[in-house]
Length: 168
Image 1: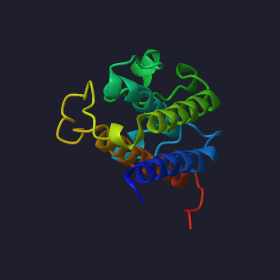
Image 2: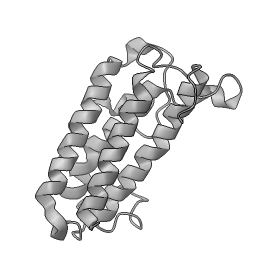
Image 3: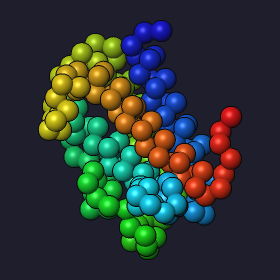
């Protein structure tokens, strides 16, 4: 497996995982990861998917300095925002999930356009604090996939809190 195949596989796998883990929560998008206690204020599925949209939308900004098409969602889903308990404060679940998949498809096309040699390029605008991890385009894309898996773990916790059985 070469670098392009590895990154494409990781991007596709995390996209499929997000869909698989989130679909069942369409009717329970505000389920918190654990009931009561400190865990009761964790990130619900709608916030997690919206946050993934912010990050995915920011990839062209990080790599090339291009604008984030979901910049207007930052007050709801950016790092440091707190999930709200009111669904009407958010875009509809299906719109957020569809936007995530559309943004991921754009990232996969971008990967194809970059080609293997493009993976060694230096990103244009690395977010502060991520400089050691995002020294190349290839590393940046892998960091994005690892970030997705972190939030997929939160979505899985929400599924359990909503009463769904664990994945086997």
